[in-house]
Length: 112
Length: 115
Image 1 (cartoon, rainbow over the protein chains, first blue to last red):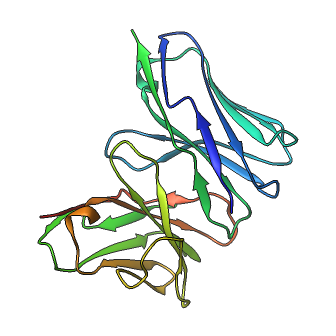
Image 2: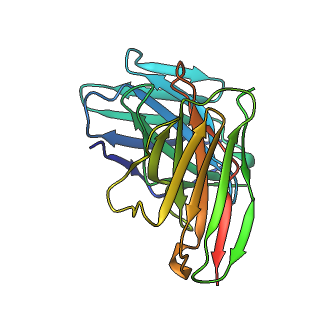
């Protein structure tokens, strides 16, 4: 089955700097890659997603890139702010009807 | 739109008893619902996938006789933890999908504590 690996497990960046989180997936048939932000005790919140027919997608300070050949995708957060501090999860899915498999998570801390 | 609720938000039960958690899609019909378990500082681990009117598909290592899942309608799925033990204490989160969207909509989670 699908396996998603995520790095780093923790990341601390200075406020205003950029943060990058990387993930790899194992099943080349996966075609949907969402990213979630989860605050303590809360539900995961979808922040951006990308389909396999797209190489890059951007939404304000957040961008995701996908390299299908290498089977890896990355989350980029620019101009980080204190409210970006949270745990971020990447995930992968085969289709609309398929389960979503989560990466292990990255705890992002923004230093003031 | 696309709101998913869970009830209860937290529950404490004694070892050996059973507890039921409800997951409802409030404004859409969920053809597929998923149940996850999340231990502190860990990722979401998929327990099972359920489709309305069908038996749930459990992930490897998840005891289907212990974690009973029912998806009786397009808006309701339930997870019953039977004969709960302290090691079952966790954060249980459901999610739901429509048949036309890739996106999953998550419930707020239920924190289960077994004493």
